[in-house]
Image (cartoon, rainbow, N blue to C red; front, side, top):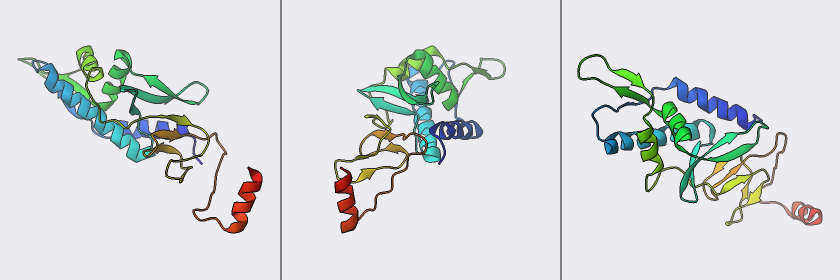
Length: 183
């Protein structure tokens, strides 16, 4: 079993290897480059999800957040501020300023675009309820035991290294009795 930190690093490497969209920021209305930036964030988030089953950006309590591993390797939820949004934008797109005369130049994501993205009325990021380190039952009675983001619950299952759960979909009578005895 790979650790969550390994999966996060693999997603970062994957995103660095693919082409990012170019977003022109000079003499362009903020709403245009802001919408392009939101689309780039959505695309990068979907690619991370496809690569690792762990999107990086979410919506929690009506606000955008990201998940990351702290210094102890625990998965944490961070609110996005202008600086963190600028970081995410820098990884999602290349920002270009083309002067009237001369060659286009790469520039840092403008703070106005970061503020625009943070101020959006809605995001296409998945809903995040929280992070759990223990398997649990979903409202429909199925067991959440696969590492990563679980869309039905909005939870990220991030068990400690070495914890594995194997529950049959249709346990026999002996397995049911053994489970009841354990409880």
